[in-house]
Length: 536
Figure 1 (spheres, rainbow, N blue to C red):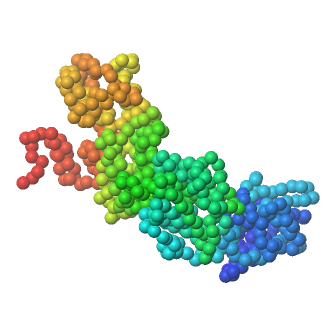
Figure 2: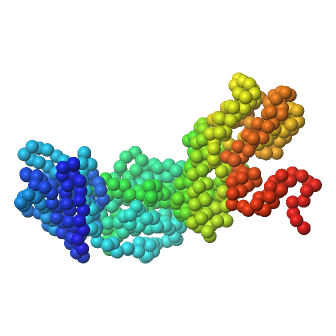
Figure 3: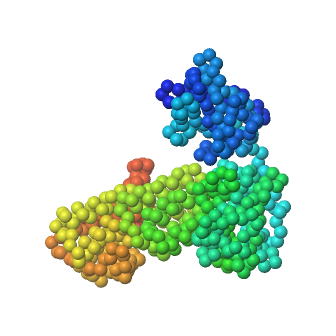
């Protein structure tokens, strides 16, 4: 099979590349306009990389010379009005890319794609998948406490197991990734989220210290797989280890879809260890780390993390249940809604939009998971026009000449809305409306707050605290009730995913006239005890 591509070198020069492949070999032909005395400066790598490897000598065309430790320079042959080079090389899983530049020795000039070099993708042998899981099973000794398999980028699989025997833990690694592979790892001793340098007595042979947090241990290539074992005494064993993979002769990091990999060790013996699948155990740890860490944290951060975790979970029922429990705890105010960070309403609503749209897309594509997806969505607001929360409270204050002066309820609430609006604001608005309708009854204001889960103590502990009682101004009563009833609708449209009026407005266009009439009747009669909403 022969393929042809053209690579634009600059405005005046194009390189024609013909690649012919057989089962075992590659025949490569490069052609371009006559360039006189020109050399191809080239080397090979597994992927596009600035780290080149010296090609096998059998693939060097006539006249090639070594340049440094990792490159060859091959002169182009002049044929009529063309400059040409032909290569012949064996297919190799180790080499998938030819990296190259042009060098003109007469003028000491380089053309190297502005320092990025040029690249030709080479055919590689079809990879025969090695069953690392079965190979791992045959290797294990002792009680199996943990077992998992990870896809490492598109390089291959890594199967890992942890066993316990004779008061010791042993971690087994088996991978079909070829090459001089290294385990770049560190220990988690006080909590599962830290990455620390292991003690010297924990280090196996062929281990070197990389920096003040990590060491690198060489794999052993045997029977077409790379293998490694780590052993820890039970008393001194870490809670777990974090690792990525790299190569002894190539500066490239391999991980699990952009994430470091965590393997529990002593943590496996704890009574409160996560009992679900190992993949979801990683997700649970990510959630716990984010929720209990010292970093700033708000609903916006929680929603963004939830969005990213759903990419890893997809339709896994256990993983979706984990997300639901997490979001339900948040919904019930059992988790911080704001910690050391100010979030603009538009930033919060954008994070909600991303998460709810992700869930809506999953609802369409994963019909078997719809029940759990619906439960998650019940804990979220719709997002929508968050910026209006910030704009309209100011408009209300200006319309009624309410001054933005410290020491007043409206200004304190206004500051909270500007910097950290949350579903608490729905309850505050409902309580303020009851206060207005009752001609300034403060007891009713605070009892309405408490009924909605917002105590006076909670008001005072906001990062933008509300510590002043609301003022009742008789001549503004009706106008403020009108404005804040509309403002309440806005707050619910952003923060509440289960608000009947908001849901009816959003879905109304899908209903026929009769259905809309029924829904309007239910909505307008929902607080009238004399009206039966159920037909006999």
